[in-house]
Length: 174
Image (cartoon, rainbow, N blue to C red; front, side, top):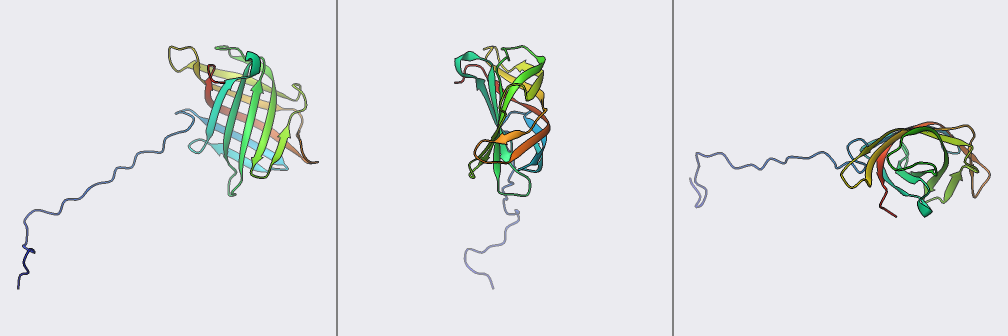
């Protein structure tokens, strides 16, 4: 018995194949951060696809400020790391730039920061222009801290063993 409108067809039903593209990387193709934190926050960070980053000139054009953010492994906690390098100049790599570092535990309001420029040093190992403007760069380096970052609004501290990063820097952003 055949039902009206239900005739057999010799053609297979059409299917639409879903092609999933890889997620957009928020820090460009080379954006990465790896670090070991211990003390008030204990974590091994190995961020790439989930890494958020930005970089811009510091106030009054004194060097650059880089921001990296992501989720701590196996938690709902997000942190942001701010790396301020007052001596960095456009297009110049170098070793042992005195650096201020701030770690923010987002949502909880805990802040950890260096007290002086003498606690952390950054080696800028890569700085490549992304376009002809001379403003957009990828930046890479390694940060070393010789003492813990004190909690600004409490009595604990956080240590950064070694932090390797690559991200974006826009000298025209403010």
